[in-house]
Length: 305
Image (tube, rainbow, N blue to C red):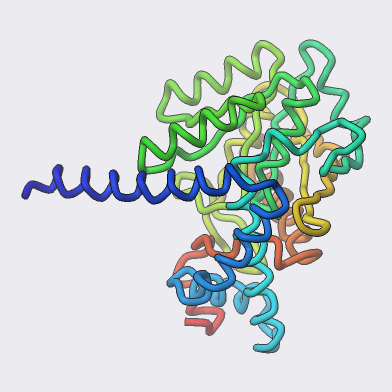
């Protein structure tokens, strides 16, 4: 068998399993889907290799943490991620901006500033709680915003998720190469907004401190904000119980455009990292610890590997 055939077979198996899950959870009501997702991941998560990654990251970030507290965070993290997975097919039914909404919003008056024509921003956040709620809030409010994301390796799975998000208004865009960068600039040039996640490893970014350890960090948000003289608009989301959430829209970060570009970039990236770190400290169980955010050398230096 050729490598191409084997790869195709694996992708088809992945797609079959994913769509079986998707169809199953789509038929459940929102609360049952969230609860069932939690129950599943609290069983499977701890026996996965990702659990070891998460444990190392937690010990790196909180060097004095007791093992009992670490175990509590890990269990609560799997609970949250399982709920997120169960909720994905239902994100369009959260009742945004209705009387029976599942999403409370703090700082709506700040978000509404971007309803004004030609007033754009670079939205920046991290993988908190059910992070898919944030772009849904932005576009459901009527803000002209395109959300960047990393395409999934399996095209069939990616297609289903993109179509599901498009059904409730979220336009996803995976920027690649020069043309991808140009498209982001065109959106900002016409007064629109873009949204990025800034808490994952980004090999072509810059080094910046995060929980006291240097790691490669995406600098695109700062560079684009500088080029188009727009603010960095931060948002966060917290799970308040089951499939209910609270979104916070903070006052935007305003860059000092009078300083040299490279100074602005480093200062801005440091500020975003510090903002995300502070929010993680508020609710560590609701962050995506399973990502290999730091290089192995940071794990070694922290004594967790």
